[in-house]
Image (cartoon, rainbow, N blue to C red; front, side, top):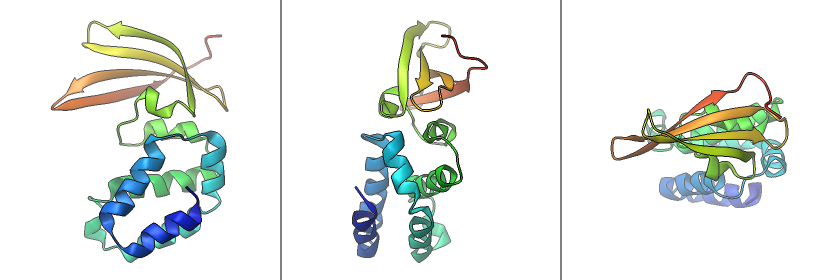
Length: 148
């Protein structure tokens, strides 16, 4: 998906389509190169958001998260910084951004602990996926040093 397709979806004004577009980008097939290319359009993407009222922000949460992330990348952040965003970011969903190094059960928290490394900047993370309410949540921690 490129900025032309994104612009078309925004021009429909259909909030559900716009939210699904952001979800699709955030969940499927991201790579550092793809996010870097999209980040060149961060200002335009954010100006497209101005058509919405402030009370639409809750429903369009992923769209706003995506817009914020594009700005960060444009300003020099690595695409792996998405792990700090308040959304469901499982390591599997970030396969074009992170490489899974190790996976093991976390018996104490009834979850799964995954050690990953960014494919671009080599920053390492540990995530724990745990049951939460009617679904799951992922807790991310930066690892202080590479474990090569």
